Length: 93
Figure 1 (cartoon, rainbow, N blue to C red):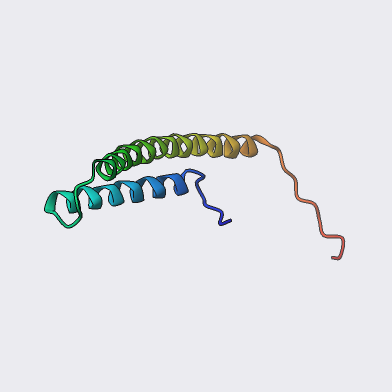
Figure 2 (cartoon, rainbow, N blue to C red):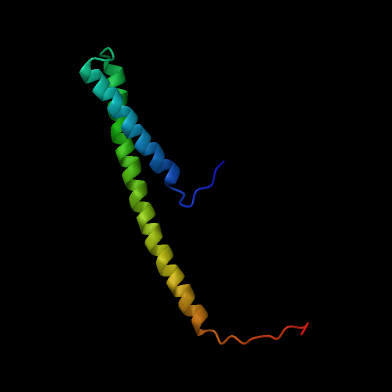
């Protein structure tokens, strides 16, 4: 299983794919490229709406996580800066 920098990336990508796929099916149905079938249209609408929800919620969660990570890194750097570190000479020379 591939690892992503942000855990929500696969869900975000799946949401975008669902929106695109559902949109293509809806447009194909409106243009007449595929035969009108209420169940197919219902699934396409559900895919578009579900994709919008999945992509939107994961995007906002990723943004919140990035802000929290930035704040935690700043706090960590400040705490490390307060430590009175001393250099330890090499044993070899």
